[in-house]
Length: 223
Image (tube, rainbow, N blue to C red):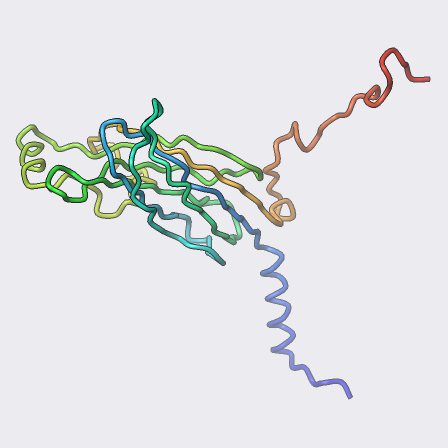
């Protein structure tokens, strides 16, 4: 005897099936590899992801903090973390594509944590391995007096919410100064984007033309 299935159960299953067909996945792994801040030492990094309202994290960490590292003794003077990134998103449309927000901190002469730089970059759209060199910046005081007061009290200007660096609203009235770079590597995999009409593979990859004479010996011609 077959089990009895109500109309509500059938409708619910159909709804789940339709939802599964209208969702794509974006998997992003990689590393926060290194940074360049020639004027400082003993730096650590925090990160978080920001994304649109249609996006949802299915696995992985949305935010994290690296270890403190010292500047290398060679000519490069790099801070090396090699801190892993691993996160998976699902969404119904690409609006609000995820962005990685990075904010680095160090120790000043008074032993207090001060911000050394903010930066952001989008998670790459195309699948594969990518490397990004993210320019960093710090907020500036509005006047010389405020700058001296901030240095004396050990309270440097910083954003209340670091995710503001990934938004455009209000940025035009914020005074900032460029300071250093952070290198990030991504390994990106996407699933079911093409089923929803989004083709993110470069045309030169998806439409590669192989010449007819490939595989023939030198001097050999096609019959």
